[in-house]
Image 1 (spheres, one colour):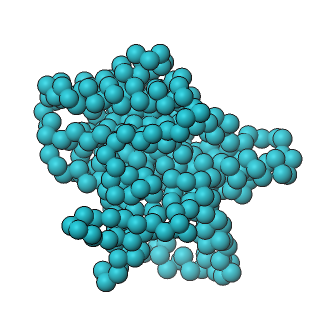
Image 2: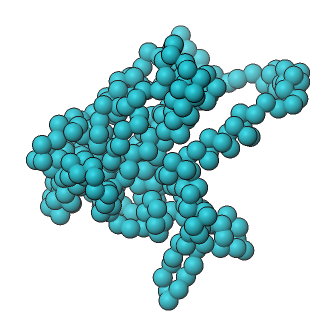
Image 3: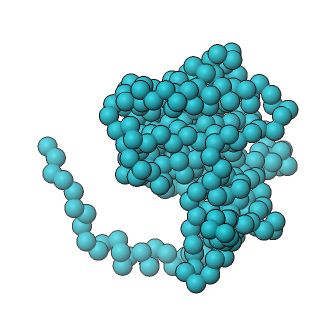
Amino acid sequence: MKILGISCGRRMSNSEILVKEALMGAEELGAEVELVRLNDLHIKPCTGCNACVVSLLEKCGSGDCVIKNDDYGFIDEKLMECDGLILSSAIYEKSPNGLLKILNDRMGPSHDIAFRMIAKKQREERGITTGKGPDERSFKTRVASLIAVGGSEWDTLALPMLHLFTLPMQINVIDKMLVNWVGLPGAVVFREEELKRARQSGRHVAETLMNPETEAKYIGEPGLCPICHSKLIEIRNHDDNYPAICGICGVRGTLEVEDGKVRFDIAEEDRAHSHVLISGKLGHADELYQVSLKRNPKADELPERLKKYKNYLAYSRPERD
């Protein structure tokens, strides 16, 4: 049982302290623990080339990223090794550290569990034994706890974006923790209840992994979405309360107010489309096949049509020696 802590904050400051407290709790129950500071890594941004998606869905390959010479392979290996994850970040402008978003962009499509399942299945059906397929460790069950730490209540996107990091890999989020009003470095050490709560969270991750036959229990604040416990709900049409869309799992539902309390109701036929469920991920993959990755019948005209934009304006760049 290996639990990985990822801190997306300053060295020995609040988010790192809470990750360490959680890892201490997990270690008490016999877990092997490890800590990575995202700020120690050099990770290049995704270029949007789609090579990973093409590798998985069209070539039955591994989905490996084509960008090299950075620390992406290091963190990829750590995530593949781990059984549990404690992910924590300081909050910057209502959201986590931007480095996490860069990593999420790199890992999202390449590690989408549905894409990897499709590639594996196609390799088996076609009898492909050469080349490299998806990492078998992708398919093991993992659980995670999320911790967001901020100096005020400007936190709307913090936990949702932490959750989005776990979504493609099908990591089951079993706890979420939001700590506000700790803007000064290290100030969280004076918040005994929050330290205790973080340790409990780490213990819960370890306990869940120790009992794989028991259904994983979510112990964080319930939120509005009954599937992923998100509080972030988008109203698509100002004159209709359906569809309201969960900001994390994308499930469609109806937003209702009854006796002064807000409720997010999800019909059974909509539930399967949640992106935290395999059914929702496979549906997403099918949509890509049918729409985004489908060759346009006028594709031969693309070079000619691009000429209009290719030579329009020169790029402004800083002068360098």
